[in-house]
Length: 304
Image (cartoon, rainbow, N blue to C red; front, side, top):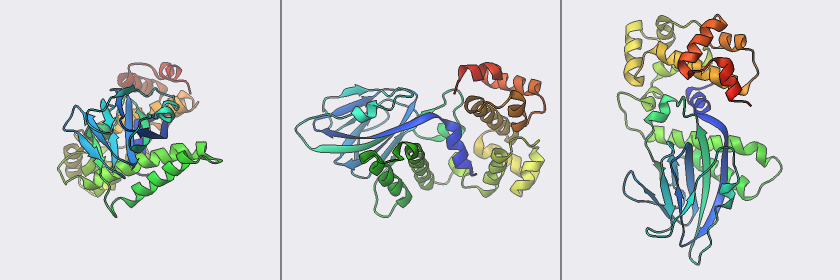
């Protein structure tokens, strides 16, 4: 287990979707603000990103675009081209396959993926991400990301036996490598998740909290596994991540509990124990503080 993988599991809900699209100029597609995070890779041709957060951005072959917050934006072959509306719906994997616009001009091919993030409990990493992540194509840069794009694009272009089973993992892999690319290019700073994931002491403590949320952790315990004094660890953790260690631990326990309630039929007592609570009563109180509903009610609202 590693922290970034855990974060991705905590952030995403439902099944990610992806497809290749092909459009001939003139074309334009508007993606309205919503709950879905979008990822686009230019496979052939080129286009422009038009958003309300800055100047239009040209995208060329191999460029990767990720919009983590579900902000509205448009992709167009040229500035001023006509635009049609598109909005993904949770659980609907078909609209992307239908995103083909016929014209008389040059062809642009895109690989498009969508991820649904939990709006009720977004991971703090999500708040650190900018509205737009642009990973330009550079020779020799981010080879793993390029390989993920190639594998996903190949499966979507020519589905084979097992494609449906492998697609979710490939789409998650694409997101992982996009975030790795963003983390690698972030300048050093004093705070934020990009800094935390590069800090061996903080990463070690986070990994232990993620791996063993059932343990009765204290700040002293976490400082010991991080190899720091209690005071130094508590200060560094709060400075970098903006909250005390045990506050994040509680957040992670509740996030883990919600995932277990959504995705498993484990008894409430088992969920409580796995999340570090000695009784269903204590667990229920903590969960209701976090989600405003009791664990059983939450499970009923999120059937598998």
